[in-house]
Image (cartoon, rainbow over all chains, first blue to last red; front, side, top):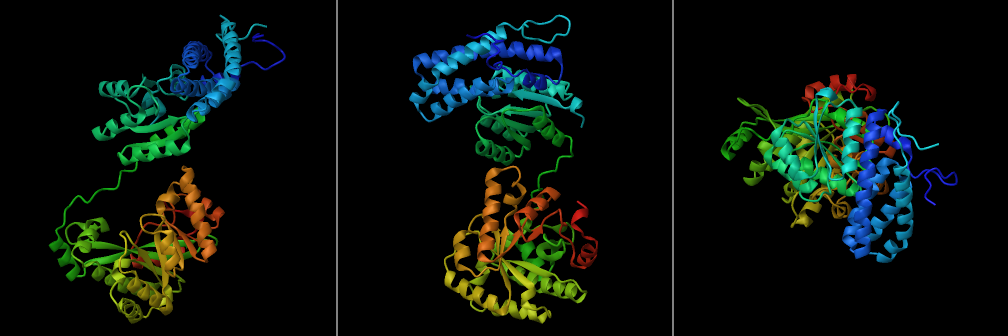
Length: 131
Length: 398
C-alpha cells in the first residue's frame, strides 16, 4: 500500500524541487535527500508523540516545522496535510487535528517508504527510484 | 560585492531547511557560509568570524529571531539581514519594520518556502552600495542661535518638484525650509523646527516660507511654467484670528494669485481650538488657496480631519508609497487612500516616489501627482525652470 513506485498515484516527492534547491549539483541533491530523510523521521516521531499525548502546542509546532520542510523538499501532499494540522492546532481545534491523523499517517508512510527505497547510483551520484 | 566574497550566516533550527538554505547559497555561488541553530549560537558565530549577511528564521526554540535581531541592533553589528518565515506576510513585514527600527540593513523578508530566485534577488541588494541612514543633526544649535538666524532671515526654501502622472508634465513644487548657516552650510529642518516650535517662533518661519514661495512661483509662471507651489502650514498657526487675511496679503504682495498656492496642512498633536482653525481654513479656501491634507494616514492626519476641513488635495504619506510593493498592508492603505481621494473629489498626491516601479504602480492605480527622488530632489527656485525643461518621466536622473 505504500509502494513508492505505485503507478496509480504520483510519487510522494517531486524530485525536481530538490534538484532546484541543489542548483543542479548531484552531490548536493544526494546530501539534501539524506538530510531530509533524517529530519523527516525525527519530525514524524515528534509529531506522533505529540499526537499521542494530545499536546496541542507541540502538535502545532511540529506540524508547522514539517510543513516548511516538506514543501521545500517537494513533498506537497505531506506539506498540505501538515499545514492543515498546524492551522487546526493554532485554532485549538482538536477535532480537525484528529480528522487528519489517518491521512498524515498514510502520507508519512508513503514518504518514508519512498525515501527508504532510493538507492544512490555510484556512477552519477543521482538518486533514482528503483525501476 | 560578488556573492563569492559575501560571508553568510544561516540561522535556522530545522536541520533540513538549514541544509536547503546552505545548498541554495552554494548553488548561487556563495563560498563562505556559516550555520547556526538559533539566535544564541548565531551570536557566538558572529563574534568568532566576519559575517556580512544573515539569513534568519524567526520562530526558533531557544533564542528566537526577534531577540536575535534585537541583540544585533543593540550591538550595532554591521550586517545586512534577510528574514525567512512561514508565519504569514503581515508578521514577517512587522518584524522587517522592527529590524529596520534597530538600524539594521534589511535586504528583505521571504515568506517560506525560500527559493533560489527569491534569495538571489535579495542578495543582489547587498551588492549595491548601501544607502547610509539619514544623518542625525551632528551639530547642536541653541534656541538663541536659531532665533538669531530667524531675525537675520537666513531661512530659505528649497523646492521639490511634483509631476502630473497622467501627462508626465511638471505640476508644481513643495517649499521645504532650509537654514543657510554661515559656517555649517545648508541645515535641514530637524535641526531647527523643534526649537522654533518650543519658543513659539514657528509662525515667523512659516510667513517667510509663504512669501518666498509666492515670489518663486510668480517667477516660474512668468517664465511660462504652469506650476503651483505648496507651503507647509501647521494647524497651530491657524489659531489666531486674521491669519487667513495675513497669508492672503503676503501672497498677493508677491503678485501671485492664491489659487496657485496650496497650503499643506499638518498636525502632530490633538487640536483644542478647532473653531478658529476652521474659520481661517474656510476663509483661505474662499480666497482661492488649495488646501492639502499632508502625511495622510499618519498621526492626526486622519479621516476625522478629512470630514471637517475643506481640503482640495490628499497627500499620501511616503511610508505607504515606498513600501506599497513589498507590504500588503501599505498597498491596501495606498489603494484605499486613492479611492477616498477620488470619492471626495480631491487631487491625490503621492510622496516618496523613488523608482520607476513606484511611478508605474501609481499610474496604474490612477494617482494624479507624484513627488519624490524619481522626479527630482529639492532644489533652489532658480533651477526649477531648467529641471522642467529637462524632465521627462522616462529619463529620471536618479
